[in-house]
Image (cartoon, rainbow, N blue to C red; front, top):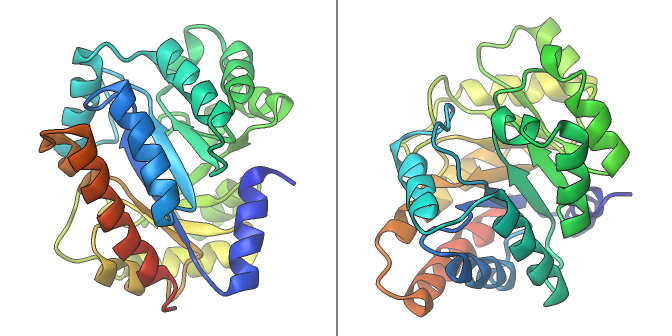
Length: 267
């Protein structure tokens, strides 16, 4: 059983839902990201996504694009982010870590080499939003061979037959996009995600987590009524852009994560 599957099993045993948090790795610096990961784990984050710095993140809105640009300006890249993952594991961080990236960064070294390096560093899963299921012939076997869970996306516009085909090969969890559009905090969530979550659950037992637009404890409570977890990114990345010190940033992000996690326990 993978570390991600173990975490969801433990949450089910406790009657809790998962809080998945996202940070742009290297924003505002790699030492800050290390501190944030440790702080979020202590605050209750169940899984943590590390976004690899990339200049053209097609699925991400302005907030996360800005975070990735800050990371690039600070010198973060695939190699030093994965080395940071090694340090986090050496320091005793146990929370499942997922690498979120784009196909260019995977294809540059080759899918097999990329997946092997990520797994060797200590990553547990891989999210590549611009590689649809139909084009995952190389990536899926490489992830499986390395022992990485490859997260699959479903969207409100996905018809039922496609949702079934997308969900069945998913491992770790199924990423349900709450809306049509880019990542970014929203004032309210579209109720359409409920139908997508319920459709996925008709076909697989793999946990379903909802992301895009989720940013407040109220949103979390709304999502976990039907889903197994929530994914929060832009609300955290926004704080990274306002940071004046690593200690202050870690304290503020940890407070936000603790509040979001508390909302997952009220389902």
